[in-house]
Image (cartoon, rainbow, N blue to C red; front, side):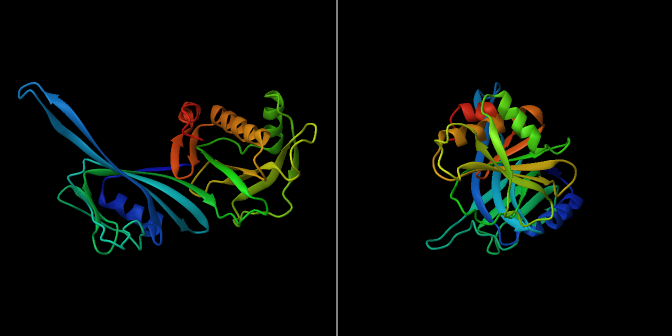
Length: 270
């Protein structure tokens, strides 16, 4: 399932370090800070109510590629310092402690990326390590369901048939997932007049979730630019998020499944 965990206590910090391995050899792909202000009627001024720092980290652990979003709320101290030629986005292993009712995170040995906050929230999606496909990969979409039965190839075929985009199914001869959690993997090829170049397809990988109940799905558009293949991937993404509760991963952006279609309709999904 999509891993979500509140970090408030020293026990939570121990869990975080054990679960992530301290994000060893990972890197920060996105870093944002937001401030919330409220109007104070007594002074007639806007006053700072809360500061939040969110960080997206990509790393590998136990044969899985993991994208974690760490949201730190109630931030009272935050620093990021980079000299020319340095890169604080590369992580060796983070350090963390809880003292005086606050959490302190050091994201690099020199302390150039440092956050003090009241509490944090971890959200994470993990997928099997994939070897490079023979054909170019044009797009990738990942979903992790919170619960429910693992969807079968026939479910995908029926959903596409109902949507008016029938496809043929072929099990992948060479599995690209190097993980025992993979349940099945194969290609969906749009049926029709043969106008699509040979090899253009949506590769589907379904796997068991590494941290609890649920399952994961990775959709990859393979081959050359093909509107039909793109339509198949988009339709499947829509149907999966309508049918199952979970979260999506596009690039390194984690999106709640219930928000996927509105997110895509705004053009954020490309």
